[in-house]
Amino acid sequence: MTDSRIVDEPYGTPEPIKPNRKMFFMVALLLGIVLPAAAINIGEVLNDKIQSRKEIESTVGVTIFGEIGKKPKEMKDNIIDLKSTSFLAEQFRTLRTNLQYAAGGMTADSGKVLLITSSIGGEGKSFISVNLASSIALLEKKVIVLELDLRKPKISEYLGVTREKGISNYLIGQGNAFEYVKPTTLNPNMFVMPSGPIPPNPSELLANGKISSLIEELKKEFDYIIWILRQLVW
Image 1 (spheres, rainbow, N blue to C red):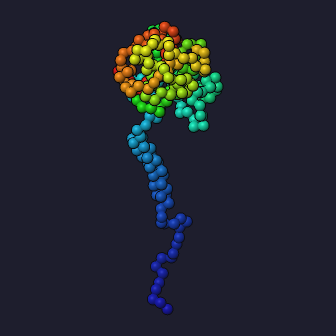
Image 2 (cartoon, rainbow, N blue to C red):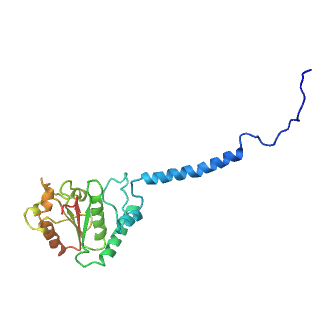
C-alpha cells in the first residue's frame, strides 16, 4: 500500500479550461475587421489610377461630357453601328447630346469646332473622332473630320480614304482647303480631310499659322469641325 491520500475529490467542467474559446473568437473577430480595413486603406493610398469621373471633376475642376469604354477585343472594325443599342453606341449618343447642350450656351462659331487630342498614340483619338462625327452626322448636321495627326494618321485608313494629298499639302501652300475635302461612305453628311503625305517636320508645319485660316474656311461650309491632334503644339 502506497503512502498517499486524497486531498480533494476530482471534478470537471462542461467546457475545457484551455484554450479560452471566447478570447479566441474575440481576437478573430477583431482581426477580421481590422486587417481588411487596413488592407483597403493601404490599397487606396498606394493606388495611382483614376477610379471615377467624380474624382477628376473634384480634383481638376472641369466637367466631363462623356465616358467612352474600351473597344471590345472581339470587335475588329473601328466603326460602330451607332443606330444599334450597344453600350458603346449609347455612350457616343450621350457624348453627342452633352456636347450639343454645352454648345448651346456658346456663340454660334465657338460651338462648332471640337478638338480631340492626347499626348501619346494609342489612346483612342481616331476611334472617338470618327464615331463622334458619324453620330453627329446622323442628326443631319454637316460634319468634317480633320486628320491632323501628321505622325501616325489612322482616320483615312478607318474610312477607306486615300491620303496621297491632304492637310500637309494645304499647310505648305498647295491649293485651297476644299480641294482636299473628301466624302465618306458612312454618311452623306460626313466628310474627311486626310493628312496627306507625312512631313518630316509635323510640329513646325502645324505651327505655321495656317490651321486657323483652314478652320475659318471650313466653318463657312460645315456645321461641325472635328480635328484630331497628336499633341498641342501652340
